Length: 338
Image 1 (tube, rainbow, N blue to C red):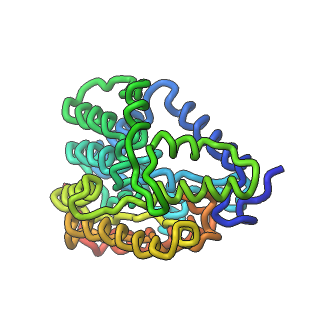
Image 2 (cartoon, rainbow, N blue to C red):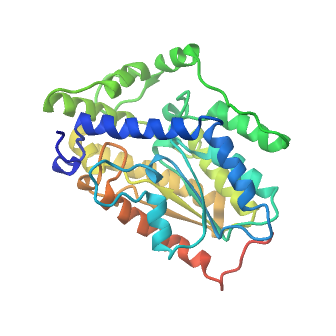
């Protein structure tokens, strides 16, 4: 039996890791049996805001919004925690693995076509998902699927059943891409994927795997002109153009473990990247936008793996998001025109 994830903070036993990942894959496979998840969510969004009044809050999120770990007492996902913190306010939720502006923006364009609007929108602005290496991922980067979704929204009418699925050539090209590093010689994404898919059998192997994963998640240097940062700024600007108040959330980063395994300079590097993303969204959204920068909010004990927080981290981060959203849901706050 695998030891509890909390016994070794930030260093998840592989058996538990596999069980959680398998559950996530089975859930997604079931929900996409007849249609892609993004297309199902587009239909739900159109139903939600297709009448005179829709849910007060439209909440977008990446995998941190739906990730839970086996054995945790609090099995609520982050979106449910936000809802509970807000007193059960009516929420339309659009979450999925890797969701970033490439897929969020088409949903917002669909919302623009509908008769009702939310009082506020919550969007993900993950530092990791603003990196070029992440955006190059054939699946989680959502480049082609995002474009296809945008075309479905623009065209209207009947929707296809399936969006693009990467072929062997897409994976081959991705695996040959060099990736930056804070700890040594540059590697390729293919080498990193081998580390990620490995099944460690000793503590040393766990630490080596964890070190390389944290390096991949954090090593890239972002600036205002980085493609992923530009996408964040444009998403904020679109919401300002739609006159809808918004809250962006930067997911917690396992900064303590990163500093321990990547060196003391890692902390300043992570902080700067998070500030770049925060500033970009604020520049786009202006006075109608707020940012919950949770990059340094959670200690290593509140992570269940290198990228996702556990129940304690979800409660902490969920409360912060709810606190930022709450003023926009107050009836005295002006509602965006429909």
